[in-house]
Figure (cartoon, protein in one colour):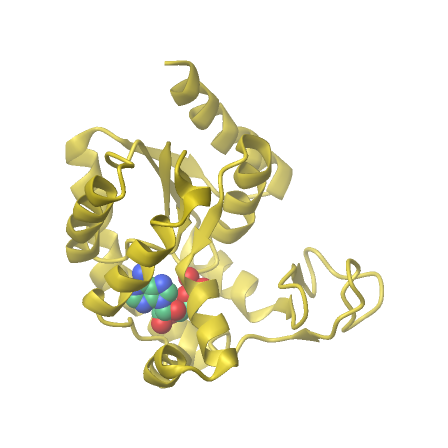
Length: 219
Ligand code: AMP
């Protein structure tokens, strides 16, 4: 089963994709995480995308298609995957159809659109902190760690993402409205889209997400 999470930055795609991944045993494929790893490793891909990410812009579609195809071709994705942060443009959605065919995944089975009002997104993103060691997510107000600045899970240092600054957040939301917003229409036409209210408690949102996924698994 190939599941796609859509929604603006800060909607909770990564958090909900991680929960689904645990419950259904499908790998979570996050393009943002893969790119951040490339930047941290300082490899050729990282060199190309670092400045683009820092500014809150989108990495070119052909670069992303190569990254995603390589990942989905790995054996752990044979039974499907949960995509977090891909596709982000209509062109990427078209390229994903080719990738899914070539990797024998068939096609996108389910698209979950997490909707959250914009002023809530800004609050979530500006307070977000991420563990530099294990990648766990926190929020200074809504989901604080037991000790300020320290990861509960591994003791790693909590940092603010380079693109969670006010200017980059504003740019990412603008890019979302202009380029990714149209994707909902693309998938709505194909009947795979389900809109889920992304407001409120993480557990409540997961219950809503899982109701859609378990319904699709049973069907
Ligand atoms: P995310 O962690 O999903 O918010 O992604 C962080 C940043 O990585 C984005 O602001 C983009 O610069 C880049 N990125 C991640 N996924 C994609 C994608 N599918 N297409 C283009 N750029 C991407």
